[in-house]
Length: 238
Image (tube, rainbow, N blue to C red):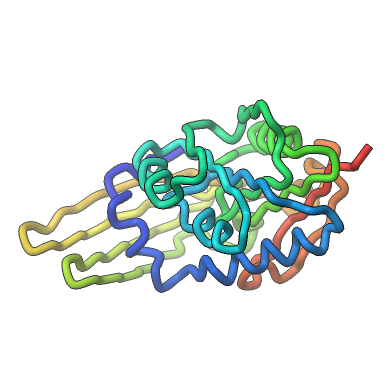
């Protein structure tokens, strides 16, 4: 997995115009209420800086989080003092006290990278919910959606910072390789940061079969937050 450590302080600014965390939290709330189970405790896997956790807490949930990036966890814990935020790899995640729901959002499932990693991750997520609990996964792109050589640019700014991110994507079998170059300008300096992330491209049939293999009853919300869909797995009550 790639590390976001150098740009963690600018992460929220970068996505401030791209993500509506309150809208996404309401959608999660809708899914959980529609599951027929009462959910209160949620684990956010790949929690980032804790903005989903914050929005869900505002709806009355108690949210803990795991991530591999220590800088993100520090921000998430400061933002959500009622929760527990710890470092863990989603492919080998284990919990002592299963949750009412587990969410893995923002395409973080792509960091599972390959079929073995996906299988381990979905098994871990399923084991982290109680009987009757719900797993919600926002997928990364499926094969064929992102083209080899795609380039993109995104800018963001505040009174103190101006940021530009250029990205280039290459496809290698069922792996998308994202090359990110950041220019970050403050009043004192302009710095350049580079990252490379490798995310697995998992077909819908594979996601469905692996969720089912993990012991979950599977359904799909075709639209999800903004057209990318959501996978929903319910652990049988008995």
